[in-house]
Amino acid sequence: MDKKVAIVTGGGSGIGQAISERLIRNGMHVVIADINQANIDATLAKFNADGENATGYRLDITQRDAVLAFAASVNEKFGHIDVLINNAGITRYTPFYEADDSAWDPVVNLDLKAVFYCSQAVARYMVAQKGGKIVNISSSLGTGTSPHHTAGSPGGSAAYASAKAGVIQLTKTLARELGPDNINVNCIAPGFFLTPMTGATRSPEQVADHIRARTEMAVLKRPGNLKELAGVVSFLCSEDSDFVTGHTIHVDGGRSDRM
Ligand code: NAI
Image (cartoon, rainbow, N blue to C red):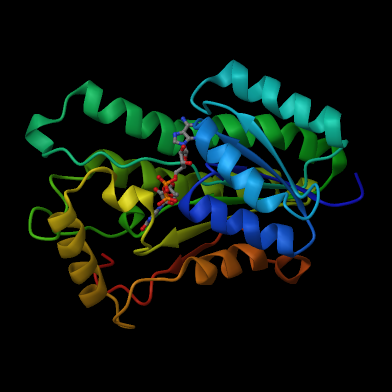
């Protein structure tokens, strides 16, 4: 395929869908890897209305063998993989003293370990072709902390914050290791963006409280627009950022709770 090929994990919803839309607009073919078939179908219907802009794969990225087979089949089908966006993630808010393995493991397995699986699976092809861009999606909580119970978050976020902090350090480490093969690895730490994730663990009242608290926290005094996030990812996938690697860009409206 002549077009550049970008894999977006979790591309069937929210932030991943917005990034996919922007990369298609930039002329790339997007491969959406998502566990939710309904999300994939709805997204492909939207993106492919005017041509073959995107392909969908139902994939649970926490399954190592499935991820390896997926990357191999994308490389075989298109001949190259130019961009990987490690975006899929979940939140589970559990008070720290109540958190057991069943609260901790699913979050860390998806939000951190699967970034390792996907990056490793794709990097072998990028190394062989001597080039590529990897963008990881962390969070404001990868470096900061947030009040809970009072901010529409029904519990603590130790697992999520730990995983997202790990993603920032994984970004730096991979950038160093893959740099000699002309692969850029960068990270985005989003602040608050209204997506299906926002309501996944909250009641409608808590969502309203969350929006109010996050709006107050940002110096720009508003939630982010998904296009504003996708634009920064687009920069990190373009030749304009060829000399940028190992960085985390906070796209958060100037959140004041960084620590
Ligand atoms: P979302 O819930 O709207 O979308 C997540 C997507 O990931 C869904 O399509 C879901 O099916 C997919 N997914 C879940 N588990 C998967 C698995 N095991 N394998 C493959 N796909 C899977 O979430 P949203 O808000 O778009 O979040 C995207 C990323 O941005 C996440 O990593 C999240 O932590 C991060 N983020 C989001 C913020 C926000 O305000 N929405 C703030 C900071 C970070």
